[in-house]
Image (cartoon, rainbow, N blue to C red; front, side):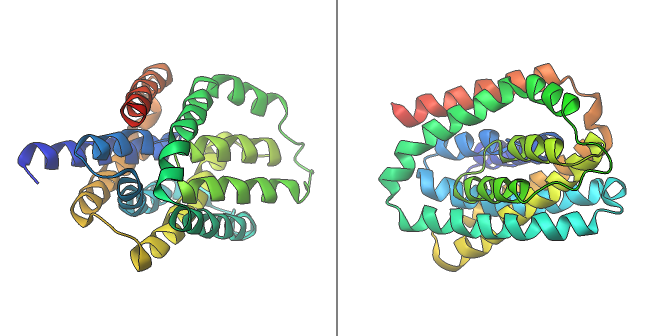
Length: 250
């Protein structure tokens, strides 16, 4: 790798780590960068997933105060996320690469729509949050499992999906819900990474660069990220995502 490639991938990793900690969808930054440097879509996805794991851990640590008292939730929803992540990772490896190349533009489109609609989702969550005494049903765990399948297979905007699911299911502050989201998304990435390391083709150089950048980005986001303009953040992610779709379909 040349100096320009190293710098670009590390910078993308830092941006992705920050975005994943605050919202989710950092893959829409790193995945297109890896494609631009000539990595195949599946190798780029596998390497990206592995690289973002340390950033997920870093983001969860950054939100450790908001995680206080959520051990039961982590265990309950974490099991669903782990199973979903394994399912998605296995699907990525057993389905042909042509299937991934065909479906990823659709997944990126879904992710971009989720990002554009995030303000509406936030309002929906705020208006329909359960009462504090609510106990919920098994449906949120099923939805968390499905989000894990999506995350294990590709992952862009997994965090946004989890925020919507958990925000509607849990009677709690959104910052605490975001902290739980960081843990669950991290579990999906971690278990998918284990599967990929065991049997997939990994580009270890880019994965290491993304890992280092994502750790720094996650810590910066946990400390300063709430000062960023949500509108500017969404606009940048959407622009990069559209570029990725164009690159995949041309």
